[in-house]
Amino acid sequence: MDFRLSPDHQQVRDMIRDLATSEFAPHAAAWDHDRILPTAALAQLAELGFYGLLVPEEHGGVGYDALAYAIALEELARVSAALSVMISVHNSVCCWPLVTYGTDEQKARFLPLLTAGTLGAFSLSEPGAGSDAASLSCAARLDGDHYVLNGTKNWVTNGAQAGVIVLFARTDPDPAVGPRGITAFLVTPDLPGFSVGKHEDKMGLRASDTVELALQDCRVPVANRLGAEGQGFKIAMSTLDGGRIGIGAQSLGIAGAAFAEAVKYADTRVTFGKKLHEHQPVAFLIAEMERRVAGARLLVHRAAWKKMNGLPHRIDASMAKLYASEAATFVTHRAIQIHGGYGYVKEYPVERYYRDARVTEIYEGASEIQRIVIARELVAAAAAAQLDAAPATHPTETAS
Ligand code: CAA
Image (cartoon, rainbow, N blue to C red; front, top):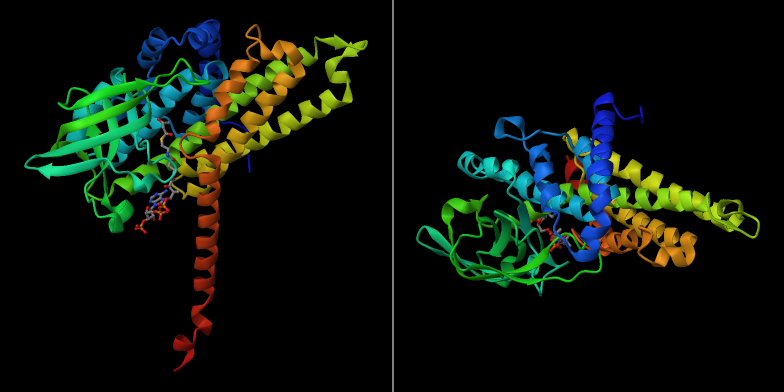
């Protein structure tokens, strides 16, 4: 077992760290403060291939593996979590399902746009269906060669800027059908009946835009259906398996930035005649923060490694997101504590990190949902192991 990054992965990390530090870091606080969408940075990232990180080269992308991708998101998040979530949503939950479930025609139609700099989005949640995603009610009724969509979607990152939105609606209204009545669509903002609603005024990630979408008799061509009718929920869930690794990586970036600031401050600030880190309570805090960041990195990298090697990774993605997001909340909270009053004002970046970290425990599946996924996977694995062990002693097998 080798825990070192490969030379290629190190190169990705160093290249993106340099880029983010020199180009984006000087603006990140102002983007956040004034709620500025970083359009110039996004254009620069598009130019550099960041809009095709998970898109194979034959479709115009750069085809990063899952680990390189996680490293990229971590490095962006270290400087601007808002920028990283825009890139993460575009790649993990828009491009990835299109690459994985799209027809050749859909890939040919949409991927060149997406890799060239048109943002993508993902729209699953609704005002009445967040954690319980299968209860979504946005309706899609087949009418000739179109589906007619009606409903309201919310919490859509990139939703107002997106040229393509992977959106989920119910093609079978029978509640008994549940998740099997959900279908995925590729919705574009030019479709009649599509409009952008409220822009959320958020606690953190203020430079990224999160909106409500309204669909009023929105006519979506059948050619824009992603996957089969009724396959939408599985598309959403498998997409989120990858997305959650990305949010884990983002959490890691935020936590890493806060940790670095806290250590720097603890090594500069003097109280009661010695540096802050020479006081045992602060030293203990520093150790505890790093313990969590290092643990989170192992889980995020293991989940990414499993994904890139084609191994089942649902439980790993949930554990990575759960652990890393809670680590980010913890580390940013303690980074403020170490800064004292200075941590509470905008002169230092740690209050931004704290606000940005908070949502990582909520979006792409709240911590409670990750715990449910983990527990269900474990119970299913235990039951499968029992079944595997059972046949030899099962009465029907041994009767003859
Ligand atoms: N991959 C493939 N299929 C999956 C799957 C996965 N990861 N997880 C579940 N499925 C399948 C199941 O096998 C099942 O299939 P069958 O019908 O054939 O048996 C079907 O999907 C239904 O699964 P469940 O019974 O487990 O469904 P559930 O209703 O109990 O829900 C849940 C499970 C895990 C709680 C799910 O609802 C969930 O993940 N909720 C959170 C939603 C979420 O993360 N939303 C975030 C939206 S994006 C966002 O945050 C905004 C943004 O822009 C960033």
